[in-house]
Image 1 (tube, one colour):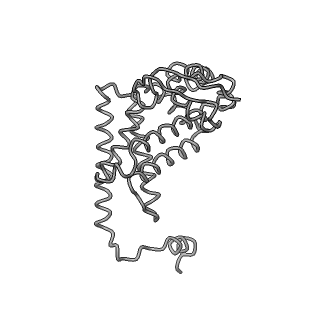
Image 2: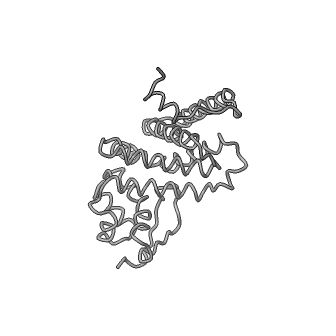
Image 3: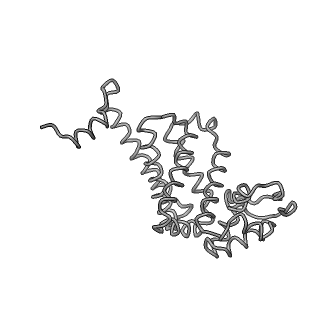
Length: 242
């Protein structure tokens, strides 16, 4: 059975804002929910302990959660499990702060920039945890899962931005945004400028570049022109005309 209601005072590892009193009733949480609830505190602890069992124990103690239950939520205290829960918590916080209707009045470029900027602000005070998470995700055995998580976050951002594409643009947009976000995080963890100004400037340049590319692509492609069939193209590669 999960522990009784626990009260804690501190700084959110997602928003960075102090709250007077945050009350979490762990008894009402499923293990999936508990993972998300503990993730911000694990991230805060990962600054010092890395994404490790020590960070998990410290997070449970910080949150007032029974350590054995926390271990049950994260069997083996696997770093990628903790990192995935943390990314999920940031995704959820972003969607709560910037629902589609709030973004609807802005241009697409500003919607995407706002969402990525939110994510950067959410981890600005725990950049060492981000650095350690990127190192874990870059390990060969974790790369496929890391790519999947990046794709998922990009998909959430595009959906919040109002994207309804179902053709190849659906995939290209998400792949491009995942690449932009990943590259921006790489700059972020090494950025010593005031307020991470260099990171935000880098983000702006990358988004501007993509917008210019999309505009040029739209001008080159005639919407009324039939696009070449991928199946026919592959067939020609396999069975070239004699």
